[in-house]
Length: 282
Image (tube, rainbow, N blue to C red; front, side):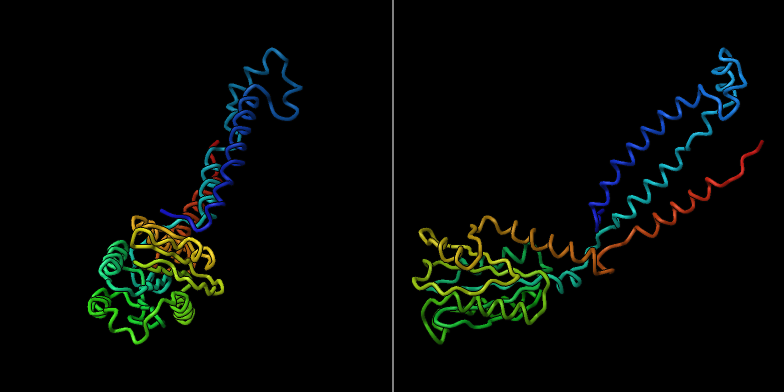
C-alpha cells in the first residue's frame, strides 16, 4: 500500500490527543449528573446516581473516532500499486552514453545489468567519440538494444576523439523531445576524463558517470556538468531511485498504475456515520 499525500497522516497526532481528552472527560462524566440534576441530588448520592444512570454512555462514542480515522486515511489517498510496465515506460526515460574507446565489453555488461534491474525503464543508447550518435531510440525491448550494441565497435565511429559533452547534450535533447517527466543519463567510459571541459547547461535530468577502468578520474568533469560519479556496484540503486520517482508521479497522475482505496474508505466512513444517528430504545 502507498499514499499519494502521506503528510496527511500527521493528523493522527491531534486525533490521538482528542481521544485521550475524550476518555478523561468520560471518566469525569461518570461521577457527575447533567444540568440541574447535579443541584437536586444530595452530594452523597450524586456519584451513585450518575453511575446507575449509565451517564458514561452519553460521552462521544468510539465510533466517532473510527470515522475520523477513516477520514484521515482517505485524505492521504491510499492505494495498491499495480505492476504496469507500459505505464511506467512512459514516465521514466534513461539514456546510456557509451564513451567509445578500444573495447566496449564492459559497457555492454553494464547495459545488461541496468536492464535486468528493471526491464520497464525506457532506454536509449548514444555512442560518442569525436561526435555523438544515437544508436538506439527509446525502447523497453532488450532484443532491439542488443541488435545494435553487440556489433558496435570503435572502428565504426565516423569521427574519433573524446567529446563526452556532445553525448550529454544529445541525451538531454532526446529526453526533452520524448517528454519524459523522470529523466536519467548514465555515461559509461573506460577512459580518463576529457582534457578539455565544455559545460552543458543543467536540465531536469539526473546525470550519472560510471568509470569502468581503474585510474579514470571523472570527478572534476562530472561536478562541472552537475552530475555524480558512482561505481558499477551502484547500478541497482540508480534503478531504484528512477523507479521511485516514476512511481510517485504515477500514483498522482496515472489511474492505471494503482488501485485507489479512497472511495471505499469514504463510503465506509459515511455508512458508519449514519449509524451514529440511529434511535436507541428507551
